[in-house]
Amino acid sequence: MRAMNSYLLDTHTLLWWLTNSDKIGARCREVISNPENDIYVSPISLWEISIKKSIGKLKAPDNMAAICMEKGFLELKISLKDGQAMQTLPCLHKDPFDRMLIVQAINNRLIIITNDKIIKNYEVKTLPAGN
Image (tube, rainbow, N blue to C red; front, top):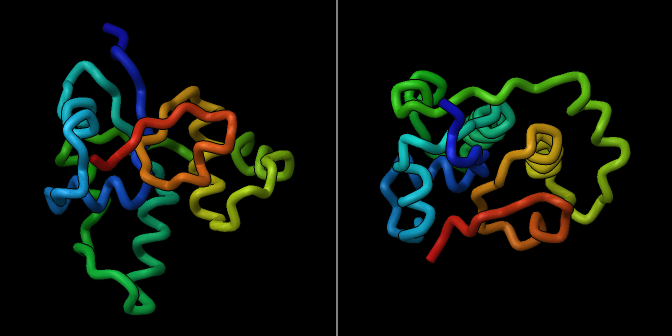
């Protein structure tokens, strides 16, 4: 059976979801919790979380990969095509993690669930994560 829609969680959305933050809006909660939707997490997000943890900018569990799988999120693989596409992505966003998530969403036809307003300037579908 084909999923209703396929989504990619931005890193902050993933963290908000895992901590049951009140920053997550009702529509976002509905989409992520609907078992008919495919919800992807990129290794890019775990890479960003790991780096920020290691420099003391973030507190998060050590077993993020296991937690993501336990929550039923799908792993979005990074492809050579994703890496190559970075050279043609307009440099509107300076954050390299967000830029790669944008490329992955475009290449895989995913909707990014985010509150990052800069991402909306790209040719990628977005869904607001917040209220």
